[in-house]
Length: 289
Image (cartoon, rainbow, N blue to C red; front, side):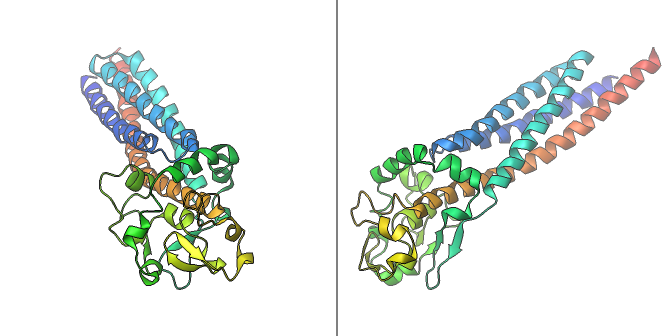
């Protein structure tokens, strides 16, 4: 019985350690001021991580002090928490699976279509209620004007690559609240591609990264009529800008999902062994009685 309790205590300690990356992922998402909608997904991760931490601590205490009732409660609560974490993980994966990006012929960067993202994200992130705050935040930053410091010629601008998750975290992490400026690198981040220039299909002529004139195909996209050379307007009201923000959110959650998947697999493995150890201890106890 003592050996089983010691094994269960060690496994509960591992489960407690598993709660750390879960909570850290939620805090990382919560610290990113992307938009109001992230609250719908990020805070459940933080809450679940803290609950797993508390329940694992209770299980550790129960095993260490040989309190079988506390261990039984721990196993029941942990099963519920793992189930809830799986639900959040699967939901986040489904709503961030669609990718609205597409490659533009003759351009190194990608552009983004709002229709390419999930209905849930479009309805809960870039609806009219949320977009007013996001747009105001974009206009107050130097995310677009700073492009002129990076690109001088049209050839430089058109050959720039889209940022990848391995290069840096775009816009709000790097430009708005950056510790190291990323604009020295030759790429356009997701939000810059969507908000700082008109869609390529409009046929605007490049003057500088935020000044475009004489479009040749205004009917190609509704955003062609929304583009403005006014530096406080640009394409902040465009669907491409909203799509860029969703693309940034999608990148963040894909990174967080990878951490959560690994953690959940370890947590399930620990839980199964803990259940087996507890059951064996109960059988041994009954045999002795």
